[in-house]
Length: 358
Image (cartoon, rainbow, N blue to C red; front, side, top):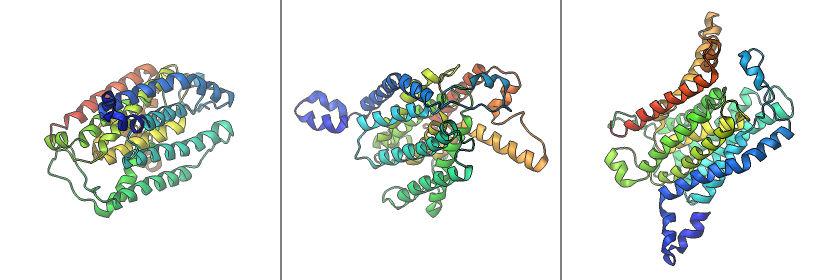
């Protein structure tokens, strides 16, 4: 809104030319998101406490988690507000990629909200069934995939890091591939959200990494020089990524150990889906496996654990996702969290290095 309000006035007041600069708007989207978190965060937490929206802790989990019983959840509402408002204020709202990303943010946020609301407010322990959640996730992601497939100018090629001349055309398989990326990223982040600050830290790091890739993908000169796919208009996604970084840091203020609030499915499903759609729009889907390596490991640990127990009758880990395995081995929760952050930073640096290794 601010972009559309002030930039047209730049011809009369030159200082307003600053609104045309993507870097300026990205930085202030980040700052705005931080301010929204700090201003609205305490108020939303009080409202969640008033609604008795408190986390129910599994009795079969680590004993240290029992003290978390009663901590407010659904704090993802803070994050979503802190992403959506700055995006509407600072982004170019004529950009279709902005609206596609907001569609996933809001859509997946609603899925998570309904699940959380049924569980913690209505005291329906089942919430939405896994089948119901998957149906809506696939429907929303599939809708975006079909839209991109029929959109002129958006190619269906798959770009692989380290192999600059290898980019197969997926054709019609682009639709299930995009659906898999968005749904997979959403659920992987959801599985990671099991310790205080464990998910939001890597999400912020991933968003910061994709902020760089979005800017480069939308820049004709830089994308040509670095030999990465040019996506006209993708640069504007840096504003959303900036807002995600600010929202992540702002939420971490309340979610760091010991947490005052948990994000719940309303936050984790939405944030994961957002990373997925941004990876698709910047044509860096494979890179998400690298920079989002922690999410991949967490998801795989659950898949392997379930598969092993079903077919072999034995568990691989003491408990899955894998962060609970380390807890049961006696590693302190804060140490697990910080180590996972460090790993994510290293993976982000590896991902960024691919800019020159093509």
